[in-house]
Amino acid sequence: MGVSTGRVELQKVLPLEMFLRYVSGDLLAVIATCTNQRLAEQGKTPNVTPGDIFKFFGTCFYTSVIKFPWLRMYWSEKYRLPVVADQMSRNKFFNIRANLKVVDDNRVSEDHKQNDRLWKIRPLLDAIRQRCLQLDRPETVAVDEQMIPFTGTTSLKHYVPNKPNPVGLKNWVLAGDNGLMLDFEIDQGKSKLISMLTDARPGVGLGEAVVLRLSETLPVESKVYFDRFFTSLPLLDALSDRNLKATGTIMKNRIPKPVKIPTQKDLGTRGTSQCSVRQDPAKGPLGITTWLDNKPVILASNHEGIYPEDECRRWSKRDRKFIAVSRPAVVRLYNRSMGGVDLLDRMVSYYRTSARTKKWTVRVILHMLDVTATNCWIEYKNELERTGHGERKDMLQMMDFKLRLAEQLIEEGSRLDRDMDRTMPEDADNTAALHEADNQSCSRVPVPPVKRRHEEARHMPEMDSGKASYHRCRLPGCSKLARVKCSSCRVYLCLTSDRNCFMKFHR
Image (cartoon, rainbow, N blue to C red; front, side, top):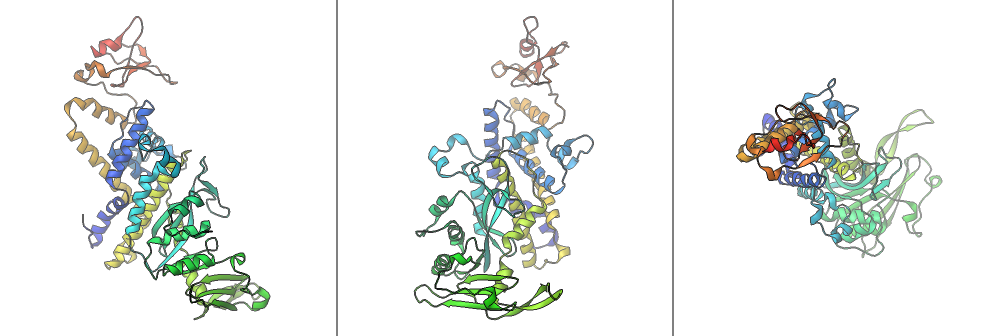
């Protein structure tokens, strides 16, 4: 399906088309297969179709925009939301979410499980990252951490204070200044990250390994910005060897002692700056700039220094007004280019999919799909600007884009289910009725046709041990209560010493 340049065509086609570039229909079919396998292992009916996975993710996107305080309210009688409740029953939605799987556990070797702690969701991560690597690289990028909120139990969980979501999994992200995610790596520890490097050096720290890993796909002469957690002089030298321009704030204890860092008293007035430059033919130039704002700010760069200076507005407590303060070029460029990952986080937080779950895999899957939807919207905006339709009135805002994406996912899921029903053989008519029953809010299952009931090898009695375990017997003419249901027909039938409706029903 080609990309159209018209306003109407872009709004109609692009959301689903762009989403499937990250998460293909084939991958969603694999998720349906693996989820069915999980259901079968638990003794439940494996009735999840690829169309159901489309509708499940579309429903998740709807609930991320149209928010209720409690997820079950979308299906409640009083607050029912038809756009959600009419597409999938409440039980089926929670059944899919509780058993959502991306891989077949039996096909993953023990060595792979030991070497990759993210193996349970690796196919999805690889698919999303593969699309990110195909995106055009801007001249200026930033590296920073992103938190995936999760408070359950997992060895991958971190606590990072002073974050909007301080507890969760840590995701290292490479992003452009417009918030477009270009590469990422979910943290599995320092040793795992270093083992991924193509040019690992002895003594590499975690922050250095992150930048070296994410910058491997950047073209030469790209400008990379990062904060003081990552910055070190050996890192800047390593990036210079790759012909990459790098800038970052730096801690004092990471600067060699021969370099004198001026104190606040040495700098004097606000806006004063000093720069120490290293001229080493073997390693290349490197500058350490100290600028006095409210307190000294130290930045290290292999391509920028103080000049050309400009002025910025700062609030003066003493004068109780805004004043003009001199600002070095390296500070101006850092402030302008460093916010890409924070911008991505903010856009994701506007319409984050709610998932109160104890399973970290479900939380990460839904988070990565939220990031994917955000990436699609940014790509959509860029495409409109490229084709001359970049005015605000000509584009869908992020909320409208995500709602359109949810609508198209559900429509595609319904189309897949209709196609499956048309290709279903005649002897599977009861399976179709079973799927239809799961999509209804009522728990009463239709009686299967006679032909299906007489296939005795497929019918086994199952005892229902739930709280509401007594149901009316479905054999015509019987009005007794039964606790046994057929494993294939899923209807309740009497099976006692004095009344065997189960055998009469299937005879």
